[in-house]
Image: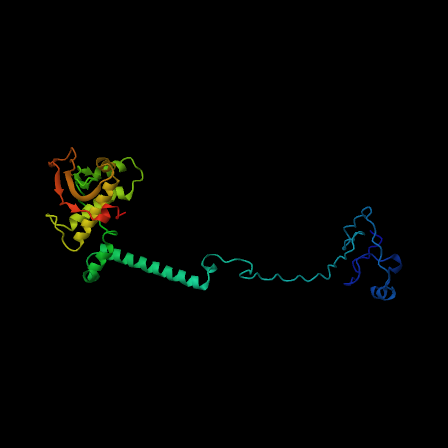
Length: 314
């Protein structure tokens, strides 16, 4: 054992160094040693030398290194551990993001905008439900308001699930009266716009909604609001005429054939629309006999307003 080992019963105070006492003071009580020994100059720091021998495992206190000046705390008096402070819910240095970063005035504006959007969505869903629902008390009293909201942009129907699907091919064709630079009016031939859409869709993995449905929906809208003599029925008849006419003017203005026929300098004065209806060929196993002769329905000439003729409908 080390010669300076004092055993496990040595007393240690908070101010007493853990260095072993000199042999002259061995055996003296700890209290008297503190009173009799006058304070002297601090002991010089010993230069680091060879490592001291390791204490025996039987020793309960580790032997302090001679090069260390810091006291080793006694196991009998552990230092008090300060409790960890609870983290603040919102650190003062963290920046706010999203709506919370806005000023109160802007937050109120955003809340009002979201409320208006939510109300609009709810109204649209309610109108769509009333439109597709069976006739009821609300639709009988406010059916006109529902139709004005739905038509023509948000029209709903059940043709996809119809038990008797369409068995006819309907093509929409148009021709135009174009005034040239010399003042003469030239009438073009018939342009099959449905055939042009069909060629654009064929082989196209992502055809546009305009190519698939614009002409078909516009023609269905016109037929539903006109009688067999092409006279408008109700207030929506004039709206369907204007809608179909504007589509024709836009298509003719973009058609390369029309620009080539007029030299690119003509102005569309009037348009005429017709439909070509032909029956779908029945399957081979069917005994049904149908006529394959197409039928035509020609509409009267429509004069094109100047703002539409000059591209005002774009």
